[in-house]
Length: 242
Image (cartoon, rainbow, N blue to C red):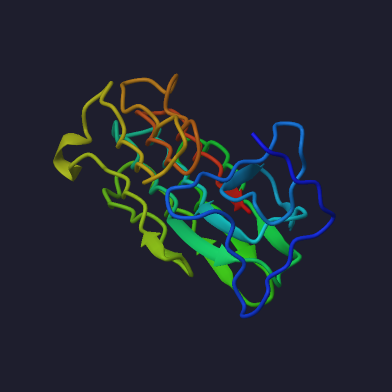
């Protein structure tokens, strides 16, 4: 094998410099450093609370996942044995973006909702977003579950600004006629299309497991005389490429 030691290689004419002929594999030594040869996924930034994304050196493109927070489940009633309705899941937006001219972006992450007190509606889920001054990508929070007796399916949050925009799953409810039944479970929370694990609150005859887990899922409705489940928080994940 021959070794050529030079400080610079430049093209003779035209605009293309060709290294090697057809079928030739060009590699870099393991200890060598390079500029312009690296490509592909380089890093990931995950935001579970609001903040600022700053473009790392060498990153030119990103894939952004924006998940809105899940809606809280409605509480059960203290009378009539009525159970609460589940909250809707947050919306999901996925966007491929060239960030060569973008140095930073404002990240908003929807916080989890609180449990609804007995006889009280749940809270709407909170919105998540990426906003860089040119592009705004949003996953809206899911709708709240109503307190026992209202029997309303609450829609999941919408999404906008992505190449893919997915509405979150709706929360469920018990049919009005079956509410008057002691020990009956509340409506199940909505499922987020990309909750990065976890799930909606469980629809059982107690409120021990009705809080949503993971990201973007809705809380379940509370059983009779019990609190509604909390909706899961949103999340923003930025996959960074050279």
